[in-house]
Length: 469
Image (tube, rainbow, N blue to C red):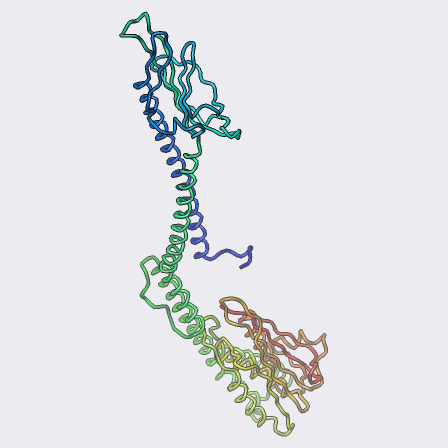
């Protein structure tokens, strides 16, 4: 699909829904990741708080203010150097570290006020191996006194630190599982979305298929079983088809009636004009003027009768096979021009068809072939090939008739395509056949080119019809 071409409704909806779904999954993933991280940090704080309170409950002080740590720490890791879980007690004039804190370089912590709590992190530290690391730290300010004696009271602070390795591992495992599940859910939802979209657009696809059948002449109208949202569209299309056909029939009938009505008066006038033994002699000059006008009127009537008979419905016509019509026309012309012994050759591509009314095809082939037979010396060539092709459209058509006659001078091409103009006044005819061909070709938005024939040496009449609806 070209970038300049508008995308289909299905592509638009699928793209918009897919982008919306991907954006939703991405935002949901970020939100869940952030929520899990906050929950993990909150659980870590609660755990560090419980360790600090355990140390506060089990830690004692001597009469001189020296610290007496608990015999059994709340977690065995406090007794394992470099375990990642550290305890630190800060006194006014002293400092105590758990066994696990002996070796690593922990961040400095100051004295906190009684009942004051802090939770910081991640803070930089140096592990026992010398590598740089990070840790979360919980601090709590406390006060201690001997038997409730206010004079012996002093403040101290307990810090509990835990490195970020355990938390990072939990977050990494969660993120891996989160994005794996979200990715799988996204793929499933995209496939389900495509299926739902295909199902929801199926009525519109059926409307398009029915319209194509109507355009190709395989159906006369759209069916009436469609969703409520599409009923106004299909009803309008059916109304347009019926109105167009009625108008076409009415115009053709009116034109035929008018031309037929004029045919009889013209015949009477012609008979009276040709009657040399009439009671009243006619002035020769007047006879000539009337004869010229009668011929012009007769040509116009003949032309309009031909157009009324051949005027076709190019939009909703069924495809017509070309070869049978061409053979029928050629058989008739061979009888008419039997004294000339003209040979007509066919060069027809397999399966090529005319998408229009049979009357239009007969008028087109009849006038072109009759003109070729009239001027040919011995050979006529009919060539029919597929024309241009466009997506979702009826194929175009190339139709050409060559003869080996004397040819037509380039400066005379425009004039012979005009109504009533004949290539040679000595040759019998009305001079409207090629004008009819040109009008028919224009009605199908095609072109008619008159050029010297490269095949036979005479004239080539080439009709090109573009791809149709």
